[in-house]
Image (cartoon, rainbow, N blue to C red; front, side):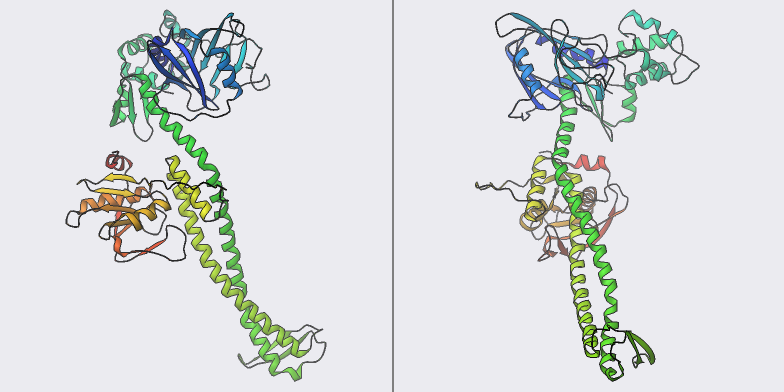
Length: 566
């Protein structure tokens, strides 16, 4: 974890101006995250504290968050004891990822009280705990019973520190004891250091190892200390397949990453890194209900297709039924009453054939029965083929929706998918007397190598708007061949477009398709004038002609560089 004890140590310098400040307001933005509005040194700072299992952190934020209308009990307790309180101290416990915010306040009768807000940043065990001056737990973000953990956390009990193995503080002389705790013949030295030294992350230990080249009894202490002294505060975010960050540049990450961003403060770095992930998780959570609806409809339609294919397969007997009816009509005089079957000459195939009969029906009624079965099977086959065609189109449409759900990155896109699901009858329409305002369609924008604008629709509403309303007839339209993907358009004057622009447009198209992770993805392109809607089909369905096909391999770094953020 990049937010290790060393990072917290440097982050504490950002929080020093809060000492002496007043907590004006506290909000809770989700079950695990609170924000504190603190007035200090004539300015108001917003402090975000989270115990989220994968997004636990503490930092100042400039982002705006929605807050629940009905405050949860945890928030009520924090407001009761901390609002209007004065921050007396903010301190890190040792070199660990534990922070204590000590607040003095007045209770309901005016007596002075002291409260401590304890923030434990420990992955899935992270927590935010409010304790009194006797270290009795008043309330916690996550209550833990004794049956769940050896360290219970709930109101009324005395707060205990996490039951971890005692570790050495690398910022004190305790670190000199480290060689005695390491088995240099046992291997996995980095893991042993992690288990014996407080607040170090695998990222920091790898950097220290890189500085000493290899660990030995003589350099293990000096290697850690020199690395601590060498690293200066230079908040750095490394961009790649798996983004990394640290409070300083690290040589080990400089060697692995081509792109990095520096920030003025550690809080700005944390705000940038975690906010985008918070947004993605909240969007994903919001979209999950609609994803479930689509998946259910997809599975149901697939089963329907299998059943229709079985119906069509069974309908092959209709020709036998027609023949039985005709033969019974021709040989009716040979059929004896109450017979279970009759054997007659099949003049279609020049051989005898046995025809099953219903004993309670006359020969004429048996013949009519087979004619009726023939007509029933014939109609059944016609209808099954018709329904099969529609079901296959539905599966293609739902497959496209599933792909679009994977691409969702904003709340607006979730709303657009929801509106489409309501229009298509997958979910019930909301009863609303007020007219909904038409929202602006926000298309993703890119720039080709030569500066031409590339527009991308990420769902059917955006695709329809881009292809049928926004683009001009001479604009170049792209779509992956025979798989779900976005509609993509290069807006250009005909004389301006080059092969490089077409290649860039095709790469962007492949990246926004189901073939994103594939190589040599086939992409069709043609002018908008040759793209037509298919009447009576689901949203997003088009047909096109006069196309050319180009094969490309999308590279995420290249696509990101073409992104137009204006």
